[in-house]
Amino acid sequence: MGENKLLSPLNDIVFKALFGREEKESKIILIDFLNAILSYKGEDKIVEIDHLNPFNLKEFKGDKGSILDLKVKTEKDERINIEVQVNDEDDFRKRSLYYWSKMYGETISESEAYMTLKKSIVINIMDFIIIDETDRYHTEYKILETEDHFPLIDDLSIHYIELPKFNSKEDIEYMEAVELWLTFLKNTGRSETEDLLTCLVERSETIKMAKEMLERISADELLRQKYYAREKARLDAVSRIKYAEIKGMEKGRKEGKEEGKIEIAIKLMKMKMPLEDIAEITGLSEEELKRL
Image (cartoon, rainbow, N blue to C red; front, side, top):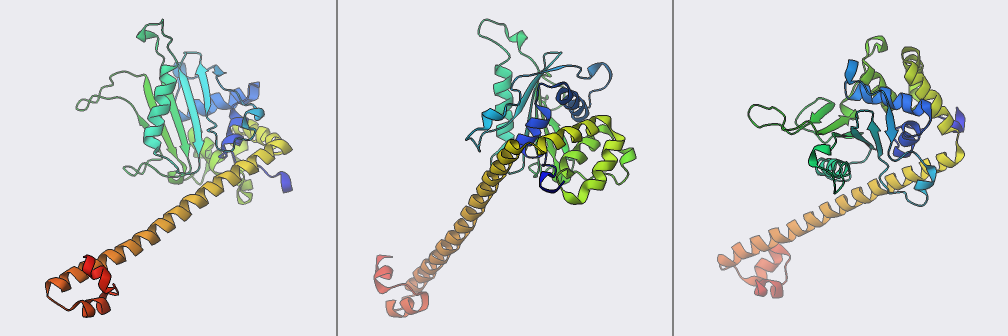
């Protein structure tokens, strides 16, 4: 597609432009995506959604660091928050719980009873790993009794989708719905995966619809500029973090070296070695040694 190649749906502004519009097609692919991620089948399947913060390009004006999450309400009055992140910049475990608590609290007003609180689901799609306790790419967390593991209440559900742990099956024909969607998210926007996308759209009508929507999004010049600004801000943030880490390591090595000299000097002084000799061995001045 030349300059209008497909943008990556893992960019949060692109993800929201794709799944967060009020248009019928956007809601169709989001419903299919959510049913796949949450493994909803039969009567449990989501049929309708209402966007609580629909996509609006104006909301990104001059704010490259805002959190572009996607909030929806289902026909069963469940609340779902979806967030895509490609940088590990924060304590995501606590952050996810905080986001869940805010969303849960928003489902009740001061005049209502606690029984009116609605089930709230947080879905984190991440291009990095934060769950070291398992190799599974999809983990879900609830409030469970510690010994018998029965739920206290079903209102809390937090999901982590860690894309680096996800490896697509070679044969797309045997992929489940969630695998099709994650393969689409992880590989779209890379020139070497065009053949893979062709196979995906042949397998799934909803992913075909998503790819066609993404083509229109990628051709929108204003959105592309917002995308590049967002990517620049992200890469700048990564660069700042790496620079701080390197400087911190250098400072630590320097401080550790100085502490080592002091420890050696103290031991030599206890051995009654002359200060002049200790200064020559450690590189510390005689004035510094006297202060010790």
